[in-house]
Image 1: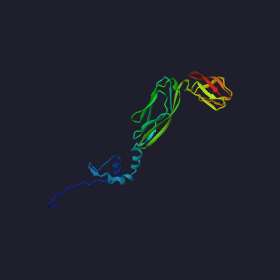
Image 2: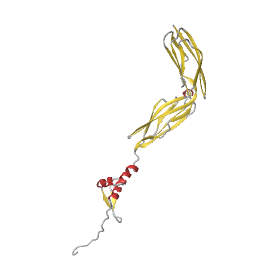
Image 3: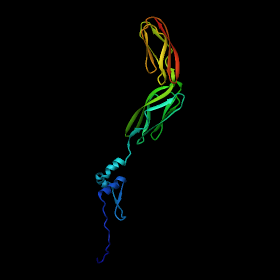
Length: 244
């Protein structure tokens, strides 16, 4: 061309919408496309329609994000033994990382401690009288929700009586007294001795017994209770005094 310079500029090959969508799906901000090493910058907002209609969009939703509600990883049962240190690690997964909390009564000498990264511990040394079954609830929470799981903590140990060894009643009036024990497995109970007229003993299968009724007259009843499981045996006398 007269008075000018003719310049050659190669045509840029346009990629299909699927390729453009892929750039938006795997990046944030601008996407680069082009041919033969040429670079062309496109604002990602201009490709949002193509991205949403691309077959890759579904894959991004399924595989590209790990956000989710908490999932607790622990077994629902924890076992330990009296006079022996218990150490249990609790954990939960989720995104955002969940926080762990615990509700319910733990064995004496045992405590819960929440840590970071979705972890916590139950640890300590249960004393001799802490044998038994303990029901607690572990909860994992994050901004997407919360998940709870019941935990049963079983502390093996010999029987121990936890009720008083004396009781008083009034003749002709209703009377109730509970004989209670600790220990795991639940101890088997038995008793010997003379029970005053009008009173009865009912032994349950969980290591307890109930004495109830209305004593017919004044006097004194002396009973001897025995609790037994595979870890040992315990004996306690019970004196019931009845006045007019």
